[in-house]
Image (cartoon, rainbow, N blue to C red):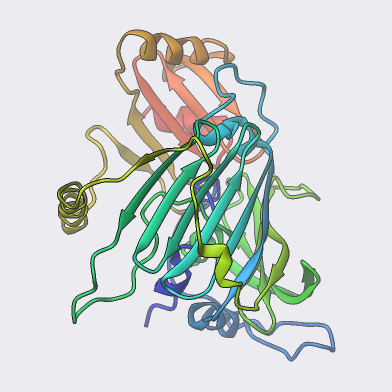
Length: 368
């Protein structure tokens, strides 16, 4: 049985693709016994993974903070974004979110940006998406569930929390990964076990990934990603404060502030979106044309074609690439972006290579 299958009740509680960028791979965990503090019973790594899979809470609320320090240079054109979120903060800075959960049909996520707040609220059949930056809101009613209905998460693309980062890390567990435990940790004032995932391939820039798992509720409270040889995490997402009490029902009631532009899609709009989503889900995911993966696991390098773009978009992309250091070799020439956890190479012949590896690995892949 695959213990990493997501639980519907936790899917919406889940952060950011940054963790996925530095993690690869997929299968069985070891049976190393946790050397926990005396206050916590011993749990093996395999037992802790099953705990996470079977975790279920009736209520949850808290503050989640994501921080990153990847050692990247300042990149012009990456400041500001949807909802007032500074994209650079995902790789060199901090983001804060509040979450509330009271069952499948009561959930709220609030992302606090530099220029405003973005909220997604579900209360029964009502779903609201609100952005303070432009005083806009979208409201739609979910259709009544059929007899074969299975509880669903909030709409795809909703920002997430430690659960998603943990899911990405757990998916990396295969023979290329050593799994161990370091005993007890303290996150948001709560006792937690700590799982450590370490790449066996020394060519990876990732030193280890640490997961803090709540000792009582078995919910991931935090995920730290360390660069090789580093004493501080390069990427972290963790609860700063958390409560497992059921939030007050008032948290899920949303009344648009005065002056808010409210968009209410028609049933036809919703049916069209649902049909598109079902069609996409039925199709087997395929990599974009021209995309390939060189290597595997923690040292895999993704090779893709540079997006064509047009006009201002292409000019902006070229401008960003040209700010990066110029490099060349037997493989050709291009521009390099390197950080503590990953490297990216944009070649002059229109390719993009990315991996959690040193630049030399990218050059090697570019020559194939």
